[in-house]
Amino acid sequence: MMNNTKTSPAPSATPETNPKERIDIINEYLQERVSTRPLIGVVCGSGLGGLSKCLSNQQVIKYEDIPQFPRSTVEGHAGELVLGDLDGVHVICMRGRVHFYEGYSMQEITLPIRAMCLLGIKYLLVTNAAGGLNPDFNVGDLMILNDHLNMPGLSGQHPLIGPNDTRFGGRFTPLTNCYDEKLQGLALEVAEKVGLTHKVRRGVYCFVSGPTYETPTEARFLRLVGCDAVGMSTAPEAIVAAHCGLKTIGLSVITNKAVFPGEKGAAACHEEVIETIQAAQNDIETFVRDLIVAVGQQHTS
Image (cartoon, rainbow, N blue to C red):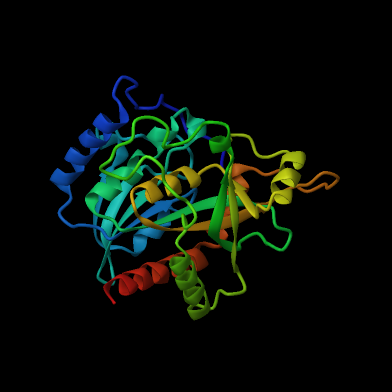
């Protein structure tokens, strides 16, 4: 979870340009510059931009150079697309995402997912830093998402509200398999292969708007309704990926443990989030690298 910001320019979105026109402008720019067709899209969460360094034959496109592309204002989000290869698998990485709490709409924060879909991806790996709600989880654990609770969506802030773009999907999108079950199983196999079964969990992610961290009472409520981790991203991207027909796997890095009523734990802070991710960097990169290769092999088999 994250809340500290860099020097914060106003969002680059042009309010009078509707989402369909914006994605067309973004797509035209990228299609002219991208020669390969990526199979897998990776969204790198706070402090996780280093995941892209395992790619060879890299092509880097800065968000600020892409017309109508939203720009991140948060520390730990570099703001660039990195395309490259990993053991023959074509990959596109988002080094940084934008968030609802930065002032963007739900439609704007998910524009990059639609852009990657139009570039040809079939799979989405979406990562995040999250607070642990499950008392059995430890700081530094990796949680494979098997479901999410979209709190803003329950109150009317949803990325699929508005005119439906039929290029991507139908009006009503089922989410019973939003996080692909086969990919979850594959991720567990990879965890065993790389010796990380003791750190890899599976659970429900709760998306909250932020930028404040949860209160003790909010943490207790979210745990009571079945959530294992909480953060400020991911669910809108996964929803739009489902609308686009992509197979999605979500991965949370547990960067802090939630404080419940009556406890005296340390308050969460963005610096702690980044430090925890840096400490777990080798495990995260090993796991994600092998998972990408495994997804590529599964796709071609």
